[in-house]
Length: 346
Ligand SMILES: *[C@@H]1O[C@H](CO)[C@@H](O)[C@H](O)[C@H]1NC(C)=O
Ligand SMILES: *[C@@H]1O[C@H](CO)[C@@H](O)[C@H](O)[C@H]1NC(C)=O
Ligand SMILES: *[C@@H]1O[C@H](CO)[C@@H](O)[C@H](O)[C@H]1NC(C)=O
Ligand SMILES: *[C@@H]1O[C@H](CO)[C@@H](O)[C@H](O)[C@H]1NC(C)=O
Image (cartoon, rainbow, N blue to C red; front, side, top):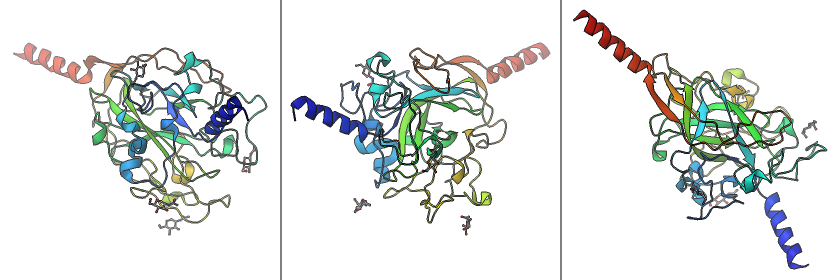
């Protein structure tokens, strides 16, 4: 075997053994985990989490990803009552964040699979833990109204959007409920995925700095409680604000499942109906009206470049430069209004 063949075999095997991460300028670990290096072929964040202590799996601390925040001003922008898009990929190389986007494809490994992908058996072309799109377990985004990562807890990190039958294509677009505004320093968000079979029963959790933009809501989020398995019994579903799924780790787990699911496979918790998550924006996660102050936060277009998409997902372009909060809010309106009335009476 020549050196080139050996290198090719090595690089192919490392690609096949790769898993999936959600890529965006607002992510932790964008450039990898070597200080000062910008890893265009980065895979640190795509490594799955399995059988780890909570100290290690929480926000991907096991390989140090939580210690590499995004640049100041880079946020994943979350438009209240709108949608946002991230790139799901086995490697940063196959996203618009590397090589000017020249290696992207329809799927997370830079390929287009014109003859289709998937069938009856587990997919082997890329490690996407499914047989086909309909069997893909689903992914989710959660948000915590804490600007300081060390203050984020399972109770204040609430799942606000799910996307059934993903990961599948590179572009993934999530719908947003009527989220309230973040503090000045922004929020923290997390992407999660628990695959169902086709490989090690692991989980994925990665961090982002995020900012809610647009006309924000008037209700704060309720404290999150652990999800429960409820495939055959809707009465057993956890309703309201739910935590992310923390599963199959040495400690810090928040769900235990036993036995078999409806298709005769071992039960695997997931961001879909088996744990009571409706698809899309989660609208039952709020406290009462008036628990948050609505504001208007100006965002800039988020940075997912163009690329092929079978579903025609819109892909706005341009690098995000951070959200800016408009000084006008309902509170100010009220203060000025009261001042005017008081001034007029006096
Ligand atoms: C999980 O980790 C523990 C402690 O490191 C180890 O003893 C155990 O064998 C591991 N379990 C599996 C299934 O790998
Ligand atoms: C990533 O690397 C690029 C290029 O060196 C640099 O401009 C950017 O600040 C780095 N970002 C982070 C979050 O380390
Ligand atoms: C997807 O995979 C499942 C499990 O193997 C199988 O039952 C189903 O028929 C497959 N669907 C398609 C469209 O291949
Ligand atoms: C619902 O929860 C109850 C109490 O935990 C349990 O006994 C029952 O088996 C659950 N039902 C299903 C279908 O899992």
